Image 1 (cartoon, rainbow, N blue to C red):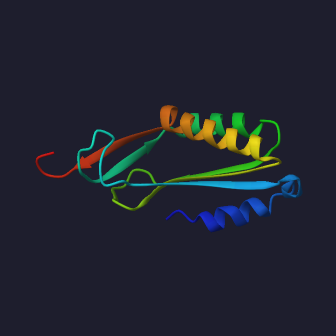
Image 2 (image 1 turned 135 degrees about the vertical axis):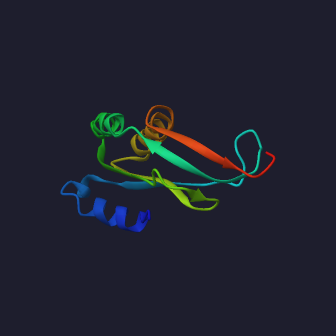
Length: 123
């Protein structure tokens, strides 16, 4: 189970946390419909861990970024409303943190995760 509060506490214990002026979190959850509007009962997420590690290293090296943590619920059926993924980014200023979270989230969705949606009967 994803615990954003625990992820934030972990980031706050980072030795460079004093340089942070912002901690930003993303919490993705299972929606009741697919992007094309079909009703779903849930989904299963698969993760390319090698690519995830590469992206984390790349985004951690960005200017002003103190730490990044990602948790993904993978390889198990998730129901509507369940947490799918959490990303927590700590950094110096808003512009650096916002851009990093947005870029990393888009990259993870495009390059790291794949999902199997479970549709309701007849959808």
